[in-house]
Amino acid sequence: MKLKNRFLPAMLLFGVVALSSCEKSEQESVTPEFEQNTISQVLADSSKVTSYNFAGQTVTQVNHYDKESGEMETYERFERDAKGKLTKVTTHAGANHAVLSVQMYAYSDKGNLARTTSTYYNNGNVEYTSYATYSYKEDQTLEKKSVFEGTGDKGKAKSYTTYEVLPNGNYTQEQQYVIDDKGTAKLFSTTTYSYDTNPNPFFEFAEPGTASSPNNMIAASTTVHGTKKTYKYTYSYTYDEAGYPVSQTVVKPNGKRETYTYVYSK
Image (tube, rainbow, N blue to C red):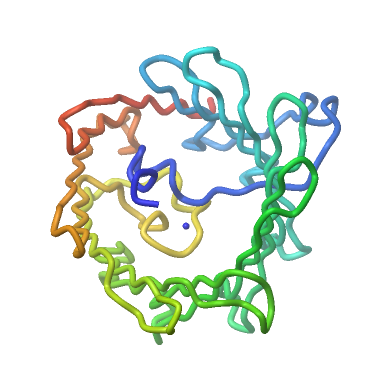
């Protein structure tokens, strides 16, 4: 759901994934129907970096842009079943629409995400495959995500992450373990999070995990145990009258700041 990507910015990392491939004309003809407080664009220092297409309140496509040139780098499209559950996400290159990756979703009898299968492509050929399984506590909050390289019975365990969740649904801690060739797990990193009390506009889009917390992250601290180094990020917001964030300023461990602006549908 990659240490360097986890916090840039927090609310962009909900694993929002995409729908199946389409013709360019189909992509450009999308006419989303938005509800109030539905996120439509994210700007980084006044440059569009992400935009969202919706059908009603259901996200159908996420577009990612180069901050400097404004060109679309990649886009993700979503397929859903009759119940509205996400079943497939396809990531395309923005220029030639080539398929970069496909992610499939499967659910338990209780409706929780149980398994994701990812296939990555290079020039139309399969380059790498992996899958992840998810287990939950009695209250249906995520307890563990396990990642495997390969497919099916031939999959090799690579890592797993455990989660701690507050009663309000905010994820406060995750610990990532890496698994060596002998099958031994070793704690790699521990990350703790804190939140504001305002609604997270990406809450409904997120895969289970930290990004699906109902409130907005205001601080994150990751300790990498092998190096004993700690990386701290802080997030500050301005809000609209309804309490939704309209801007987020990220302060990275090196002190660099970046501000993101959130544009909502009218």
